[in-house]
Every structure is written in structure tokens, then in C-alpha cells.
Amino acid sequence: MSENILVYDIGTSSVKTALFSLEGVLVSAISIPYTTIYQRPGWAQQDPQSFWHAAIEGTHALLEALDAKPFIAIISVCGHMNGMLAIDDKGVPTYPEIIHCDTRSVNEVSFIQNLYSQQDIYRITGNRIDEFLTLPKLLWLKGNQEDAYRRTRFVINAKDYVRMCLTGVLGTTDFSDASLTGALNIREKRWDEGYLSSLGIPLSIFPSLHLSTDIEGFLSAESAKLLGLPSGIPVCYGAGDAASATRGAMVSDVGSAYASLGSSAWISTLYPTMVDDPQMRMQHFYDLDGEKINICGTVQSAGSALQWAKDRFAPSSTFEELEQKLSRLPMPNSIIALPYLMGERTPHWDAYARTSFMGVSQATTALEMALSLYEGVAYALYETKEVYDELRIPIRSLTLLGGGVKSTFWLEMIASVFGRPLSVHPHYQNGTSFGAALCAMVANKSYASLEEAIASSALTFHTVEPDMHKHEMYLQYYSVYTKMYQSLKPLFADVYRLNKSYEEDFS
Image (cartoon, rainbow, N blue to C red; front, top):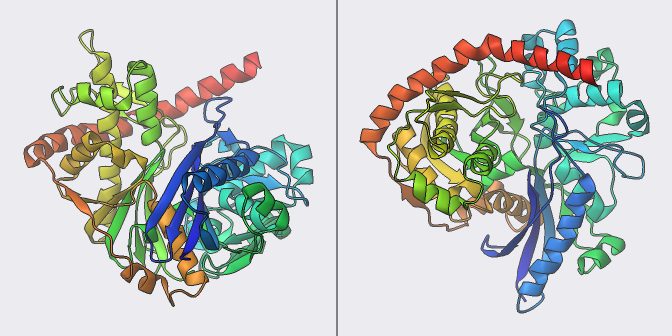
């Protein structure tokens, strides 16, 4: 009987349960959705227990769809990063997970910045302090949910919670997820006790640190019964989704990079060290090997912006129907949109930023409004790519992953905005899971290194070609796009303060 790897990928909108052979062949995959709660503007939280319930449901559905029950040699996990998932000493969540796109902690960021400059924080952690990171979210919990904070034993991330449910081991994480908490001394690979102490946060609330390719423990008898699997299957630590996706995209060196098109989108490549950027526009987080560094630029709202556009401007259409209609419109579109539904990360790092439209008139149609957000996300990705150019980090090849790759219409647009061919991963919807599977291949000693595991995986990619005539036109609209943010930046902060004052008056 052939051996297989079972992977749980805890995404922003669903858990993907996937089965791979030890040679990296995708056997089967299924996605079970769950809900994100947006209680207030800038808030985004999820029930962590829904991750585990989705993993259980996905496992049963996957096994039932197979002709024969597979032999599972090892389990791996990956999941969305930057969250704040607080658990008590029994592993029970003390508060819903405040996920990566939540920006409620602006006051906490100001508190930290009153004690440390961004340059000091960047030097310690490799990342600017920002509302998207774990640490400000934790300070918000401490200041606003005192009972939940008092009961909190550990702060972890999504994949750590599911792994805990699998093994029963509490309070562990890997270096990739730790890197994007805002609390890790990235050069010394340890939680920075002095920094945390000055903020009133105990070191003990952070989990122990491990390599993604190490084994944490084994599937417990209780969880095995819930999943319909034999107990004792080894479970490796796994990694944050962006780190898993880097390896899943078969990135091994400088020059190759990938773009993930999901609810958020990002471009990432591997580098031997942190990159020196005085403007601190990029994020740094560890690779699965705990040595190389991911240099990553993130667009906060990507697929989520398209979903919002469809829901508002074409609610009765499927994405396929909407995009057929959009493909008949002139492109570039005459309406230019900033897709900042939940603030923006690279290159602006502005929690106050919000979606804005330019060029709207009485003649503007709902379809044109929707198209502007497709193009707006493409512009945001291009703006991220330009940061790599400025930092002299060469990107010779760019591979696409994520659910957004299903849209040929959008891929052709992005290729034309970039003015370059783009490679599409054969496991594009499961590329992150594939990275977690590669992690497991090293954990169970099937391969000596991630590079060896990647080299053994013979995958066939296809290419999306740009329309260079459109590219020249897109660059002209892109020039206006970049000026829009600079012009509106002070107004975003003014509107935030007005809205905050209004909420306090009527709360």
C-alpha cells in the first residue's frame, strides 16, 4: 500500500484537507468553508473551533470520496498568519481569533511607537509594528477584554490550534509564524524578552519555537476517533501559509518568486538575509528550514475585494458570468479604484486607508465599478513588484498560486499590467498545502532537505502571456493610481477619526 501525506491548510475562508503521495502527487482535496465575523469597520475575527470542525468534516468527506482507505504516513499543517489566537491552559480559546486583516489595534500600535521607533522595532523583529501583526492585537485584548486576557495561557496561530487538536500538545509554533507576530527577535531567533517586558507582556504567553520540518507529536486516540483515522500518526509542526506557499511554488533561490492570489495577495521570494529597506516596506519571515528569509510584500484585499465587488455590483451573477461581461468592456477601465477595504500593507502600511474610486460619473455602470477593483488589485500587486525592483532583488520568474488563479480573465489582466509572462502552478489551489506536504517529506526522512524534495517533484506549469499594447496603456492609468493614494492619505486618517468619534458618541 502506498504511503500518503494528509495536510490541513487553515485558510482565511476555509480549511482545505488534501492528500498527497510521498512523491508529491495530489491524490484528493476538499474545502470546507467557515465564517469570518466583521462586527465593526476594521474588525475581522473567527471562531477557532470552526477550524477543527472543518478539518473533521473535510477528513470524512475526503476519505469517503476515495475508493480505498489510504495509508497515511504523516500529517502536516499550514495556516493564515499574523493572527492572535488566545487559548487557556486546557487549549480552549479565550476569545475569537483576531485574524490578520483586523485593524482594531491602532491605539496599541501608537502605544508601542511612543516607546520605540519603527526603525528600532524593524531592527529587532525584521518587520515594522503594525495593526496586522499579533502583538498589537494581544495588547488590545489585554486592554479591552481583561477576563479573556487573564485566562490566556498561550497566544498561537491558526495552524498551531489545529495541530494542538491533533496531538493534544499545547503552546508550540514554528519560526515562520513566530516571525510575523511582531515579538520575535529575528536575528537571534528568540522571543525578545526585554521588548515584551517593556510593553507589559510576559514572555511565557508566547509558545515554544520549533522547525517546521520537525515532528511535534502523534495523532491522539481521541482525535483519531473523531477523524476516522488510526491513532499514532506522526504530526509535524508545519508552517504559516505564506512560508508553505513559497516552497509549494518550488521557490528555492533568489530570482524565483511567486504570487499568491487569495483573500489577500502577496509576492514572496527567498533570500539569505534580511534586506535593507529604509522605508521598511517588506515583511521578513523564516523559511521552513528556519534559515533562509522570505522577503514578502502583501496586498491586504485581493480576492476579498473581488468578492465585495461581485456582491455589490453583480449580486445575481456568478464570478464566471461577471467576468464574461467584464471581458467585453474596454480595458484599461476609465474608473480607477484603490482596493483598500481593510487598510493596506505593502508599500503603504496604512490601517486608515479605504477603498476609493476616481472617474465615476452618471454614465458609469455597475460593471465598470466591478472592473475597477479587478484592475485595482492588479495595480496593487504591480506596486509591490516595483519595491523588489527598487531593492534590487531580481525576479526572473513569477509563479501564481491561490484560488484567484481560477480566473483566466484576471490572470491575463495581471500579466498585461506586469508586462511579463506568468507561470501557473499545476496545484494552484493547493500550492500552500503542497508546501506543507514538502515539509512533511523532510520531517519523515523521505528526503534530506526541502531542495531535494522539490527537485524530486516533476510538475508541469503553463504560462499566461501579457498583452503588451494593454501594458503600455495600463502603465498610464497606474501612474494615476499611485498618485491617488498619496493625495488621499491625510483624508483617510481624518475620516477614521470622524468615524471613531461618531461610534463613541452613539455607543
